[in-house]
Image (cartoon, rainbow, N blue to C red; front, side, top):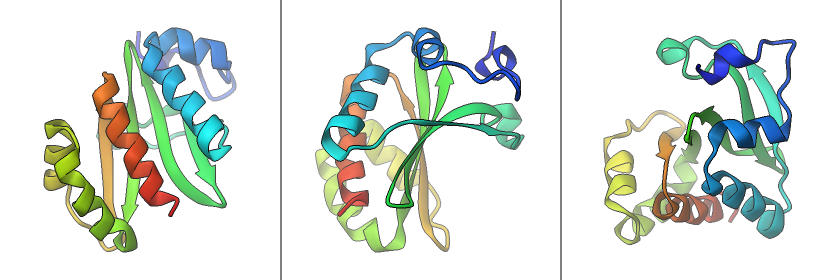
Length: 143
């Protein structure tokens, strides 16, 4: 069963239910990292957006600091999707970071279209290496 089919708009999932559905320790690793390093807590939000055949529909987890969106998590069975904006003023630092990132992240960055506000990277977070890339990019977002 898909995440967006388990919890309706009126059925907000608990943090334990999110963790159980994702069922991957990298989820807790990211959540702990954001709390401990940047004092950022997860906030559940419901989205009715039907973009990309419902991938973005349903409950998601947002991380913000000082009004700035760091990333949004979309739970999947065994992993999660992470949407991260990279603003135009962060592009140079992100480009300099890319040679230090995994091939996956380099390809994602290269093939994501540059919009008028920057890039919106959509990661499939399934392993620790990609999570380490994300942590570095979050550091750029907060500088």
